[in-house]
Image (cartoon, rainbow, N blue to C red; front, side, top):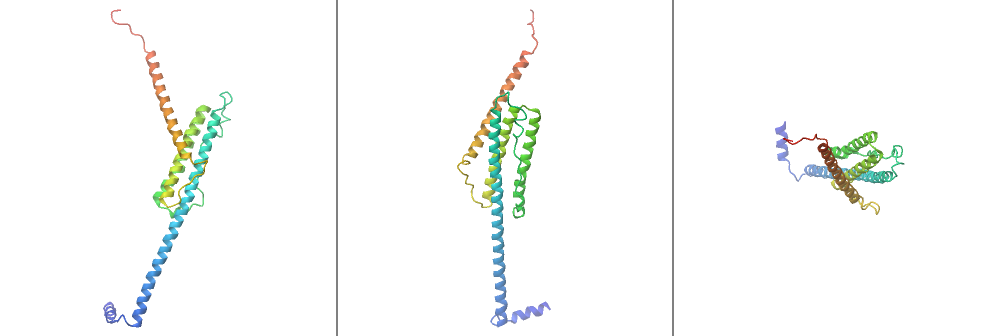
Amino acid sequence: MGQEWLEYFQRLSWNTPISLALASGAVGSVVSLAWISARDAGSRRRQRRDTALELALSLESYARTCRTMMHKAAWAAAEPAGSMSREATRTVSIPAFVYPDRIQWSVLGRKVISELREYPATVHAAREYVEAFREFGEPLDLCHQVEYECAKTAMAALSLARVTRRRHGAATWKPGAKDSAMERELSDFIASAEDKRKASLERRKVVTSDQRIGTQPFEQPLGA
């Protein structure tokens, strides 16, 4: 049967009406499929771009919230030592973070989704660390720790938002006057805090070393 159809098509002249109709139909089908494919691809790109923009806006908003909490912690730390209490610092903590419920995750790649979903877990770990610090640390130390952790989580949010915008062709972030120097402010604060931590650690090592030397028993020289 297949051989008969092959012989039929070989004898068929492309100048006949039926041949022209078949050829025209095939070309039309190819064009239609190509147009549908291009339309669907364009729609997926727009969905990815819109989703990326929504994710970036959420991350950037969270970075601003963290910066506000940094200022709140700094104000609490500036209170006189006698008036600072655990009750006064009760609301000083790393803000919680979740993505909006309406995010269409299905339009993004698995690797992108994995990177984005890791961020809330990082924030949660930092919150748990601060809460443990609250339980055992002093109020002043808690305020400084909240400032530092908020700066790090805010900086990470801005970095992830920038990558998300660039990767999916979303518009570049154009912060307002109040936020124009936020990234530099966060970077400078983190660098300063880490320098202070290193200096404090070195001082503790020196004090510990001096204490060990001072507690060593006195040994009389031989022949005394």
